[in-house]
Image (cartoon, rainbow, N blue to C red; front, side, top):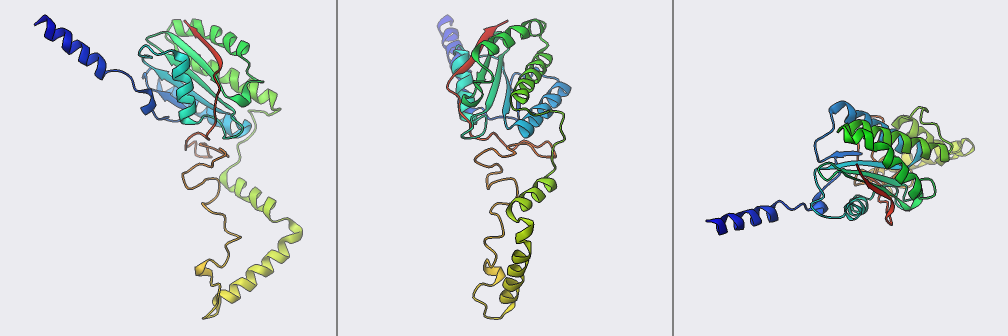
Length: 261
């Protein structure tokens, strides 16, 4: 009987091993440990979205119940790279990971933000979070970290986080202004009229329903690709409705800092 109990315990431990590669982001905030209250989570999500839109940097806030014996540096880097935090190419992403039972934390910094958020700064910030984490005020700790990181990035980019966020309609109009300068508008309108008249002919070679305006209609709609996000991040996962559509494909080489509390 004792041998059977030991065998069952061993099997249970094996079945319960964490497979971090199977985790998917729940938004800018992924509370796998279930320690954030709805108000803190909503505020974090809103703030991270604002930072993304106004600075281009992407923040990921993650809690895990345990690291299951793995080094926090490996887990944070694996999540960062698998989720692609930050715009592809720019690599301006940040991932804050709290492992609540292990009392360990990690701030993982993407390549593009290392000059703004060097390792020394990351270590100092984590030490400042210890008092809040020791009282299990995880939401307040993550909000403090998010605001400090967002403010530092915005300052370096000479951006105000108090600026208004453009709506999709404003973005669409801005795109048209960039594509069609005022001086070219008459020529474009004339071309559209001619193409319309040609499409109306019974045997027109380039009828509208066959794709008569291929160069005037952007593929995949405005502000998103076929997968719901652009490969370069763009407005990434945040729009005027606060909806998250995924991170932008960024990478990290292991910059940042780790600490306990």
